[in-house]
Length: 240
Image (cartoon, rainbow, N blue to C red; front, side, top):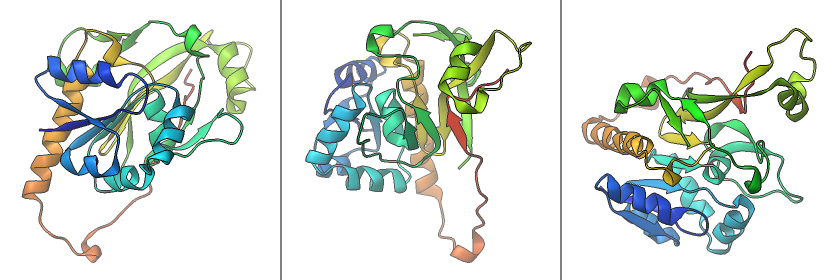
């Protein structure tokens, strides 16, 4: 099993080290043709605007979009989440190009700049069910995998949808920070910067399941397939 890690900028070395700890070799991806040699891809955290400019310079976006459309597993962490989202708000002037495919809107720099980064305990029931371990993590339907509480006043200032929060509302609301949609996994935080490898193991199981489905699938005509519109989530989503 070969796993690619987009190696333009950011924490790609940390992802490769985490993959090594779970017995898998990570391949650095910098050119479109290198995607042909991997079964899945991790897009690391970093500076999303810089990564987008480098990806555009190396003509990677068409190949990355095709990789997603082919149904191969892709995991985006932080900046990688922004890359995978269908829409991003809070971008720098002029915006940036996105890969898309993940049916959500992500709020860039919602928690502040990099110097405002923090650690927090995050409840991860889905990861616990699949990978075991402690019930929290430090450090086509969209499935919510993890949430983190934020003060209500920050939620109201950051999202027009919650500007009219009632005075008696709870002092904290939950923000979605990890989701899964089909072959796409996305986290707003950095598992690669911790010693906890459960997220990487979870992603590798997504690869195994995809490979098994591909080997056992049969051809179906378009008349045999019915598609329903999946629910669309905006990230972060505030829940009282």
